[in-house]
Length: 175
Image (cartoon, rainbow, N blue to C red; front, side):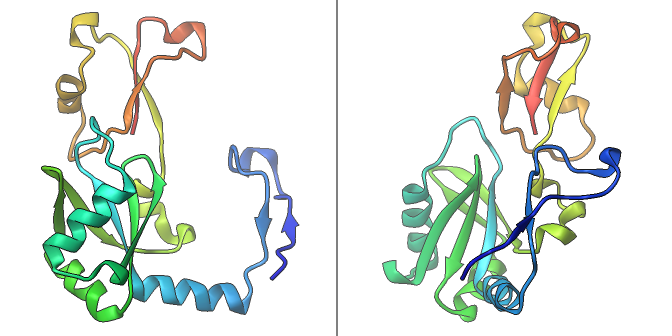
């Protein structure tokens, strides 16, 4: 299947940053999206200090759900986020009923797959860089600054690179 890519048009201020092309949504893509919706779950690592591999996630999820190896595939979507694709919708539902699985002592929160177009309400589908001003250097620890946010957050890591002069002295995180 050949995909035709179009550049995004419209007012520059309404364009998404770092997205350079899109593709026409076809009937084949709709069918593939439907299959993923009924066979796959998104698993988000709650503690991102230690990265888990696809192999580790695959092994531990199979063990917890008592599944044969061929009934699950695991793909990394981004750091600390995996796509778990089950052989059947029944296995998908069995895993979803658990809501949380554990991989090497770290919990994975399970969520339904949804199209990125409708994902605005799910923060796990987007990655943002947050720079905190006024945090003293001895407070540059994820557990300390996590308390500054309302509700649960998923920290992908600390960003030590400074993009602008104003960021010197800031504590920058990837959420």
